[in-house]
Length: 441
Image (cartoon, rainbow, N blue to C red; front, side, top):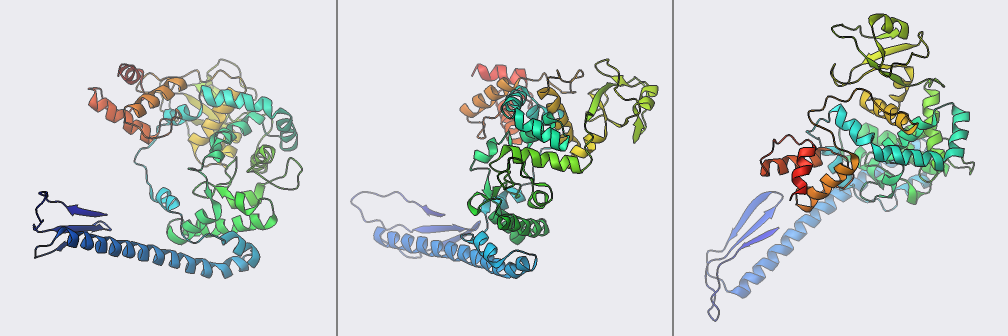
């Protein structure tokens, strides 16, 4: 960037004041001083030369970085070939991939300061919209879901919930700002991200082997910035292990075939020990003033301690093993988690993820939801109100993210900024109070 320090000009009079030209390059300020008087034409020439020099420097730096990346690609070629990637597949995979993906590097380096509380995580993923769309998808794909259930013995509502969690029922596959070229993304991680270099190399080789099988053509081998693929966001090695052809066209296409994608998710759960006909867990009510053991006990043993189902119904099998989880403290909902909860964690090894899948699956299946609300510090607002809140914040210039009803770090920062400017407690919570003030603006 070039910043000329401009002096006032008097029309009809030759400019003779000293002229300074600041060049700002790579975060450093370098000043060129002219200890003599110069005319406007000389200034223009000097500025032109400076611009050209800076552009040349930046271009040379970028070209050098790209050349180093291409050298890395060339050095990786024999490694991939030794691992089973054919020379022609490697060359096809890297055709047109000449530089790292800067978006991937930005995503990889971003470390969010905001730790999302469990109630916000659940609210963003289990809501009126995700339930309604899930029920619509259950009707649309009903015959295929029945076939998948018969083949893998996994509850269809669990599969729909995973689909929602992973790609918003396939909506993210339509977004160019989210989907990246998988080969370029993984090559970028392997080449430039020290923490993820091993992951990048392993997944890059697996991605090229997927291309080699013919399950997907090169132009459609896309994924997240981290290389997660298709409707159900499988990393390439997991795709190799679990991908199945459900629709019978000879390809395991989790990008364009919803049956293949849901069947692949079902296969992962099935092969990791999913217990058919059983739930993932139960919401329970805890007796006051008791301490509870860690680890797994039978339902009957938990009942002896005083734990009962929150809805008052009996447990189906008192001999079933379960583990107590209290994700939001004793004032929030509590759960007895069965084996299927831990199978869900083989998909994503986070309690919040498995809990959200289970709760969303229950809601899609018609269950009314939790009896005990989360221990939020404010009264929650509906999905439509969340969308309205983001719309108001965007119109007022506080928010520049997507209008999706999901309250993440960007939304919370916008809410907090609005609260500070309007005399509210700056806690960043999407409360009815904030929405009420926004409506009056």
